[in-house]
Every structure is written in structure tokens, then in C-alpha cells.
Amino acid sequence: MRVFKNKWFTRWARMEDVPDFALVQAAAEVVAGQVEADLGGGLFKKRLAREGSGKRGGYRIIIGYKRPNTDRIVFLYAFAKNARASISEKEKQALSLVAEAFVSATDEQVSLLLQEGSIVEVKHHE
Image (tube, rainbow, N blue to C red; front, side, top):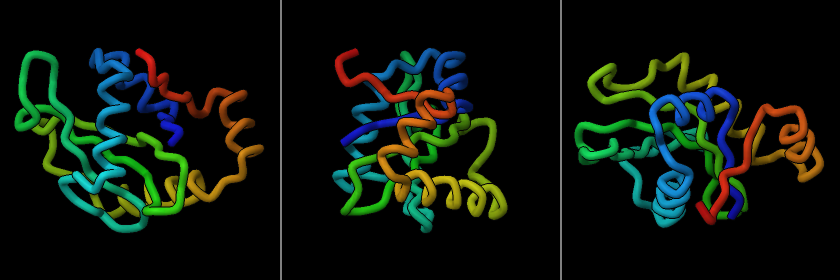
């Protein structure tokens, strides 16, 4: 399984000090079916703990993944639980389109996205 984060999520994770190993762990939990919500359209909501805090008061992350036949997962969006309850229907539709395009992309298209900096591959060894 290859784990990616889009440009927006990469900046957010850096600002919030979210390490890649936490994202790899969250991705493994999504693949195992351990999610807070299946939003439909290949989108899943997952809780992520804040540093020094638990998952309850932490972040909510929106992940694109197509069960069970994909080898890619992409982190798309995140927010603090105390900032908002969820995403709007319009945001959900837009993120679903992005997720579907990404998981159905060819390896060549993914390589191009990596080269242009639209996505970043999460390192599993950090």
C-alpha cells in the first residue's frame, strides 16, 4: 500500500506537527476498516490524536481510499474537532471527485503528480 498526501494536507500536517508515522498508522487502520465514518464515494473520516492529547479532542481527517482493490490511499483534508463538526455536502462531493480520480489514476499519472508536487508520498520508515 502506497500512502500519499495532497499539497494542502502536506502543509496542514507540517503546521500541526503531524508526523508521517502517525499517517501511516492511520492509513493501516482505514485499510483494516477502523474508521469513524464511511462518507461514501471513496471517502472516510478518521480520528487522529493531537500530540499530548487523545483522539477525542484531536483532528478529523478525510481520506480517499477504494476498498478492497486499490494499492493507494490519499490524505485529502483535516480539521480540529473543536473548529467544526464535519465537512459540508459540497466539500464532500468535491473531495469524492478528487479521491476517485486519484485511486483510479494510472501509475504514470501518479508519477506525474509526484513530479509536479501536487502530492507527496508518505515515508513509511519515519
